[in-house]
Amino acid sequence: MRGVFVFVTVEPENVPAGLSPRMIFQEAEGLTLILLREEVEAQGLAYEFSCRMITMTVHSFLEAVGYIRILT
Image 1: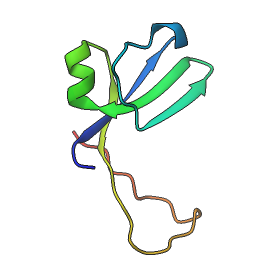
Image 2 (image 1 turned 30 degrees about the vertical axis):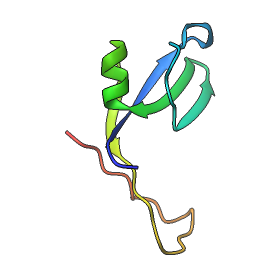
Image 3 (image 1 turned 90 degrees about the vertical axis):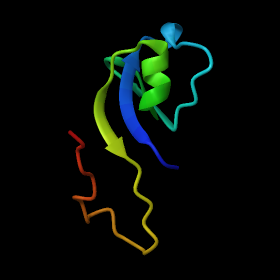
Image 4 (image 1 turned 90 degrees about the horizontal axis):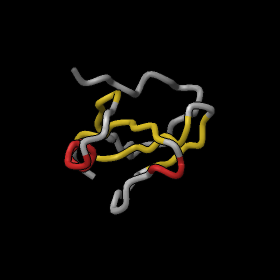
């Protein structure tokens, strides 16, 4: 999927309707969602960590870290 993705943390009872998260994590801070930035901005939510999705077409080991690049 193309686009810029961001991380949003909300209380579970405050998740706006109509969002399409790519991933959801329950953390001590609340519910963290990975969403398209344009979707988050349309809802007026605060976000962190702008990034793109990378699809690897080769086998890689979990020990091989460093595939994430922060967009500025």
